[in-house]
Amino acid sequence: MFPLKLDLHVHTTHSGDSLSSVVETIEWGKKRGLDGIAITDHNSIEASKDIPQVINDFIIILGEEIDTQEGHLVVLGIDEKIPSNLPFSETLQLARESSGLAIIPHPFDYLRGGVGPEIARAFIPDAIEVANSHSLLFGVTKSLGTQLARELNVASVGGSDSHLPETIGDSYTVVSCRKRSQDSILESIKERRTQVFGRPTPLRHRLKTLSLALKVF
Ligand SMILES: [Zn+2]
Ligand SMILES: [Zn+2]
Image (cartoon, rainbow, N blue to C red):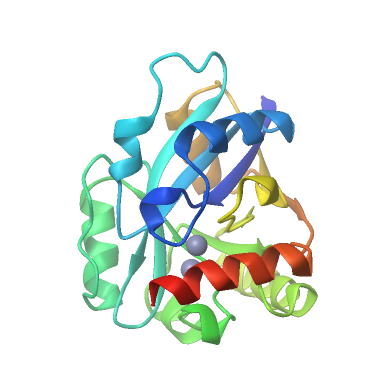
């Protein structure tokens, strides 16, 4: 077993509200000392087209942050887009059919698409994102998320929810893996071999992210 340091929630320009190109995302991920990242654009897997052929040892997991009728769901390890705006239960079903790993991101951030604990209890995901660097109350939501993951007996994970290159890695997950591969990472998360680290993204970066989102909506 060896530990891999991964930011499991990163947006790129394909999200429409992010300034990070795929290439910059990879550069900054390396700079921040990560072993890899999961690209989780809003309702898009278009970033897959921009992933360079040669990225040496850096791991990229393709995912999607999907808008469901109840809020956000992150699915990792897919190669086809999962449609948005369906009921949460149907989206989760599609994720399972495509062998994706389902993570409920920022469950307690009700203003940012968090689905809340009742949805998590009703449709148990593979993991709960307990640390999200853009959470409005980072410490409170981290503690509530950790309790929820324990209650459901699923993995705890962390991610930056970065929309700017310089905020990549603000939160991350250390996954104990057998191999340095996407399959091994996803399997290890399902087996709950994760540790969560991170900090809230500094206010100046959050304000910049917010201004990008306001331009889109
Ligand atoms: Zn979200
Ligand atoms: Zn996000």
